[in-house]
Image (cartoon, rainbow, N blue to C red; front, top):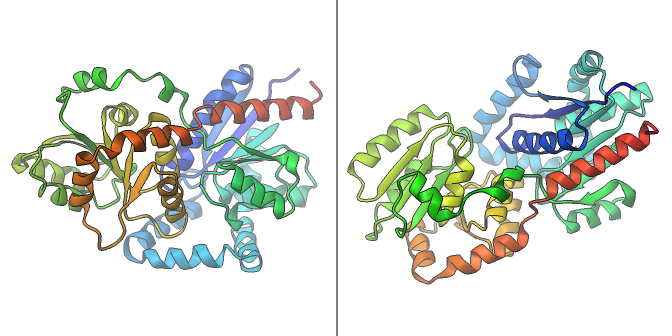
Length: 377
């Protein structure tokens, strides 16, 4: 009997969809060790030039007119208008899916982004195909752009999202509220004190991690300037990602700051730095929030991308794991208050209460069982 061939389609629009795909792929390989797993970035230049160009336009849009994305998010969230947007994207991207399916001949497809999901759904409808399609949703709120026919399994962050989908008419047996998948290694990181020693950090000094994803977004330079106003010395850990300009700016800041500043570019040490920190200051990406939940890391959230990141911020703050800094609110006093009033321990406990460290394993188990049942094994 031939080994299963599983195609995982993701999108490098932010790092969250890629991270979710990696976490699921890792667990799928454990569940089906003989399977051939292939992960494809649907928005990479070598996958489709047009998709790559759309991503570049999207990033420019976020930099200069973020409210335009908010309009798109709201318009595409309606049932009628959302279906039109979905159909347009699916039609444009469906030829690439057709090519990928012809190349890899998968026995199942997993999507961690709605663009390839829509294209695969359209391909299945046109081909009258029963090819198993599983979708891992990477938001903390339900949006029309994720909802397509021809999807055999949906995995979402919360029971509330599952209930919404049931109310929309989706079959209950296709829905599982597993949480958002994170790397299983998060559960086996060394203790905070050990990691601080490893990174040559003061053991008792308050430690703040600043990060803005692989692109180093999120106003890190402005955050550093605000933190400089605090009289108490902090240890500031900064992940600048692939943002060369930000790297140079942080180096210049570190030379004159009264805080201890440690700087990384694009790094595979992000999880260890999260474990070493007392507080995370970041944009509210869903995967970042999910990882912080598992690590019990309190968050100060700011500058969400209008739309899904706003909903992520609402979720984390509503559950007491984060403070959301709204426009006009001062960052430095908020940080000072969090450290001075002993709020961080309670926030850490609430973050852990939201954690779903087993999400990737549950998703992989469910998909493996479905694939084996579908193939009659």
